[in-house]
Length: 235
Image (cartoon, rainbow, N blue to C red):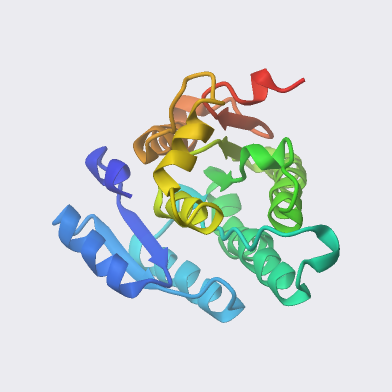
């Protein structure tokens, strides 16, 4: 959101964390950023934010469908059904509902870019992450189907696949896996990455900006990784 505003975009930032949205608004200090509180487990909320965006801006050039949750880390037979369903609701169904709500206006204008945030776990897998890995793989299929369907209308759809990124989500994973030494655990992971470090959030945002903009006007139906070389290192 900060990068897009800095580059001259008008942005609607959507999150269920309304206090966080208020902080973001203060951080930008610009009326180019508008916020909307919504729970993406609710189809009504998704319809409402989409309608608000179209009413406020008149059209939507790009939709960065980025929200996601990890679920829990446990083996397949012990994975709770309720957690599996919640991960699917946020990581997969909310993306589908968001596209469904915004695509008609994009098709009418015959232009638009949709960027879905998958993960390197959408192209690989880790044990103990049944729901998360499934949801991120499923986004690739959703993206490819939508890209083919929308190409005649000049609406592009792509996925991004971040690796390890220095975010609060990763901090919570470090604390959950290694509560006594989370920073040491992070350093251990970083040593497995060819670039020897986590990504900064801004580096992922630059990829999102590229795919949202006309600079990627011939790219659709593709997976774009930003993983510090992790996938290249896989067998």
